[in-house]
Length: 560
Image (cartoon, rainbow, N blue to C red; front, top):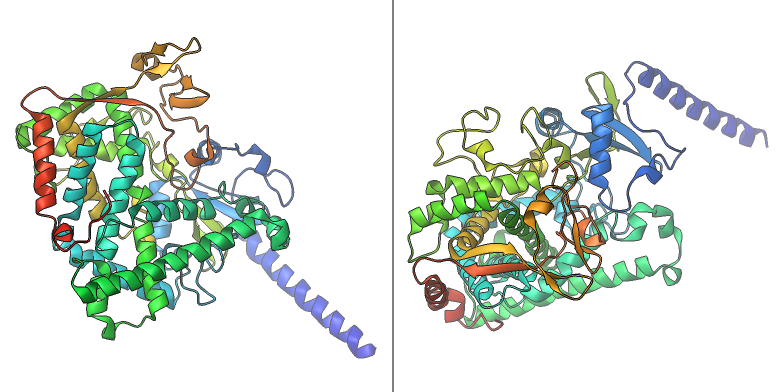
């Protein structure tokens, strides 16, 4: 009995000592400013049901470039300045490159050995070797112009837009999905299923996707009482089975000589030097493919929105593309050095509508002190892309879409020479930071130059008509949109801008508030441009790309 009491006393003293030590440590440093809210819950009820990043930016304007708050019992720190982000995620990257656990995703960090989600992993042995493998594949294929796959799929995309642009959002996603499927497995035929898996994973990892990510106590419920846990278990099982199925199918095709170059083919040809088992390798390549779908289709969709809202700038892009390519061909990535206006337009789309406006959260891996503030190990730290892109010191009139930021020397913070090299689509804070930098900016560059350049060469793009309350077709007044009027069709936003010409899209559905923002669908009108037989050129270039397609030659293109 006495020994038990002594043990409890000793335990109490140890806990008391650690609490005292923590208090003494924290008392030396400044306390991070930030919203307070309720105990444990924090300012949770201040967050909007959709569009977290607007509230985060509002907090940044109030509390400064570095602030923190407790939400659902966890410390969240927000970085709202590029300079601070460069210091923490770049120069001090060894302390700030972790990834927090995604509550609803089993072993998202890979610490239990499943090693299924490279972008979500902690910096462990699995992350290190998978990142190295992906880098090897991407560099090798970049040196071979990605086997011309982005150009082939861009020609198909423009050809499909020519024939029917009504489902244009899906066409952009189809193009990016087919391109990364070609690169990963040597066939575009898996694209529709890949897009489905990519979307489901996006739901699984987003705070506003799977409900248990934000309301973590739901994870304590047994599976039979939790539809969220049941859905996630089914999602993961289907995804991993599909990766294994693709591996086996493509391996058999390679043995029969009926597939072209791909990441998987490169891997199998060098398999003896690789440290992976088949399951991990299949998951690594599968995750690489998933990351290449919505990260690229989202900027393409923003490009279309900007073309409609800013026709004066889109005309400048069209004039430049015509001057470089003439009337007999669409742009290729080799034309990029001669297309600074196109590159500036695309780069401004990344700034104006970041694909990931909240940024991708990091986890602090080691206690640190910055500017007198104590930043503890384990804190979740957010690089606020929306705040970076709204910094008036770097981007005067930040809410205005203005590609001249990269073309006019008077914009000293963003203009760089020579214009044959700058601006670079590959260089953007949207790709992440430091040791967590996106591995595919060059591929993004190839796809966007081909696809967006092709759209500018081929079409005049306008907002489509919508049905008003009287059931009549009504034209969208872009000028009203640009001065703050919001038009809706059956309750969903077509093109919404705010009263201050901030021109941000007010989210109206969950798909607009996931980690990667997918814009609300809206109708467009694509009309073939005057000058030459552009429709004929689109048909001809599409057919020529089919004839030169190495995957068609070996029978690896069966789905159109």
